[in-house]
Length: 106
Image (cartoon, rainbow, N blue to C red; front, top):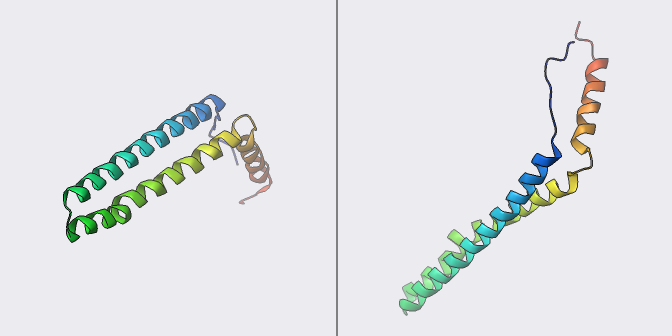
């Protein structure tokens, strides 16, 4: 089976992606702080049971998903940081090519 593709792995692109993920995480954390303050201000302005309900719902509806997003971004960033310069994905494609050469579809 002939190989009609080239996959190029670029550590510079991985480094750029990792840096951008860290910047994105910082922006997400800033957004979380702004939302927390906004909802605290709103619940303090509404010194009623409704104000307390708004404060409680904010954590479940808006803040928790942002915290989850931040964890995902951190995981992707950590993974990129771990593989940069290791040739990890290159080794995966080398093994793929070895398997591909040993498979006969006829």
